[in-house]
Amino acid sequence: MQISTSRFGTISCAAAEIWLFPRGLIGLEDQRHWVLLTDPENERLGWLQNLCDREMALPVVSPREYCPDYDVHVKQSDVAPLELADDRQALVFATVAKTGFQLTINLQAPLLVNKQNCIGRQVLIANSQPLQLPVGTTSHVTKAAA
Image (cartoon, rainbow, N blue to C red):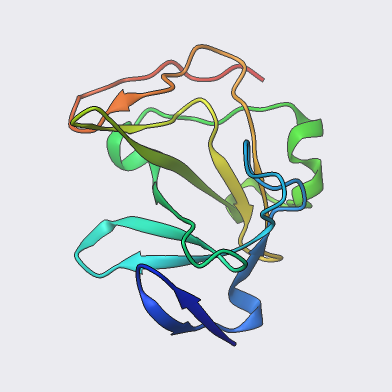
């Protein structure tokens, strides 16, 4: 499949690489089909490219790259739609935003993806994880409660 993007030009992706977020993402509920692209200049950064809107690509990172103690504990009902047979099947990503001149990571609403069936969901963490953790700060965040 060929996808036209504003940031990466035309790219090829297989159907098995497309991630389905049945409920969309927070604020983007109608955008359900995404593909993860690598950033050619930064190996720690990925781009979640929307398949329907060539202009929409969200920067994402592994939150554990910046917060080694980050642990996602959510209600079973929040992850049941992912059909995870094992927690090791889950990929965890955090979105990156620019706040003023600072890049921040959203640890409060991670993206979880079952890497076996490519179904994803954005979940809200119940405890007080940072919504805008500045990139480059050392953080030992509190583990989330189930």
